[in-house]
Amino acid sequence: MAAGSLLIFAGSALGQTDPATLPAHDYHEGLLIAADPYVSAARAKEKFGKANPVPAGIMPIEVFFRNETDTPLRLDLSGIRLELTPPESARQRVEPLDAAETAQLIVHPHGAQTPEARRLPIPKPIPLPSNDKKVKQMIELLQPFTLDADVIPPRATIHGFLFFDFDNNFDELRHASLYFPDIKMIPSNKPLTYFEVDLAPAASR
Image 1 (cartoon, one colour):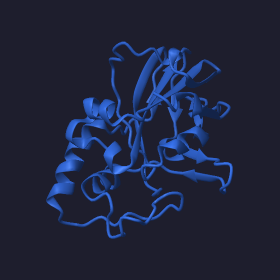
Image 2 (cartoon, helix red, strand yellow):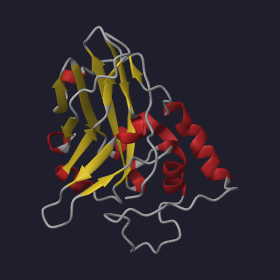
Image 3 (cartoon, rainbow, N blue to C red):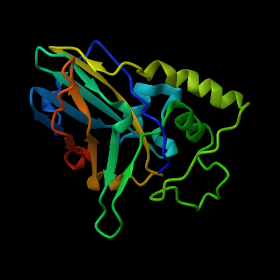
């Protein structure tokens, strides 16, 4: 996996998705966080079209934040991590990819490495060419999914996508959890207990 910044998409309409029905979720203190990994390339293609990251070995995970309180909440986007705990390997906490890293891996999935080289599990920087038209076009396709806001309004739901480089080893999802360690009430800055979303129940979706 490669380290990077958070990539997330805000949407006002949830369609038919009720976050509470998703098998991977955590709820306490009036906040529900649920995750929906897109394991299927066909399902991801319906969502992302030409910007489908699954064939490049990238796992898109849609995350929902439902604030059931009367207080706005501030989410530290930079603190979100995916933790891998495979039974025969060392534990890892990995950052999501940013838009540029995601685009680079979609356009050039093998990069400068040989096809046999595994990106997982050692995090590696992704070299980003300064003048690659195809990568720039892919970033433009991904940009509409990005979110700069970090506030969850009261009695509201926001949702979006996190992208992680699994190097096509999607079976690792059975040993993965998402951590949200820094969520605070506004304006008191009172912290909520950290959230952990076990992704194993959603591994077959």
